[in-house]
Length: 285
Image 1: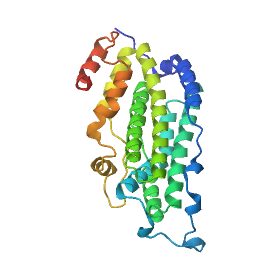
Image 2: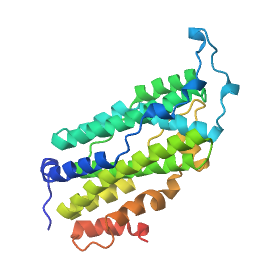
Image 3: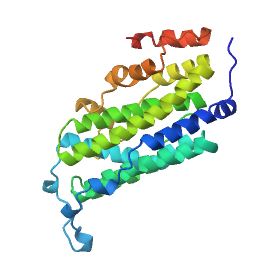
Image 4: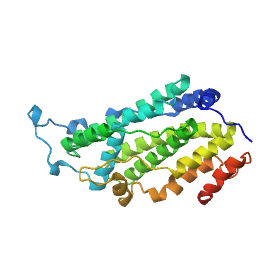
């Protein structure tokens, strides 16, 4: 029977792996600048500064792209909650440095999308601010999890975010929206690799324990949601638009990572790991 490691023991035993992957992540990450993607010359003042307030006919975005970017910026707006939820598990050494790096990257996403939306007048700024206030006031809190659950969940979440942004890019709404969405997707994918590599290392260290965490997080997985101004649920709207459909998560999110971890071909699982693997047998390809 495999021994069960505490979160403190896992933090210590995986610390070197975190350092290696943080260094790799920083080396591979593009040093892009959010201001480069904003058409500043198209901007003008709103009425408060003597300009013109927003009117619907000023927006040149299609409804699907507009909703997709609103959802992305509102999720990114809630970064303080996500930072807190991640940081309370990883508040030591290189783990904490990774939290800082991840937070900075996510904040850059919010800066870019919001600046683009405001300068291009793609959305009603007053409505967006009301949504931001409501979304952040509600906040976000996860149930208590163990470290391995957090790592697996983050790998899945970043992979799902990449799918959402790749599909937004595929709309070919306009060259800037495509470039912005591709840029965000690339960041999401690299972040997913970081978490996935930590899960892979954990599988070697504590196979049964990690397998159980993976199975539990897949069973309970759901993407972040926002309530839009018209009361619609973002998950339903994005699914109907083909931007992110939860019914496609097995093919687009779970199976690629399970393959990366050699989940269905490993030979080091004990009874607990084999039970977890059997629960996910429907995802084997």
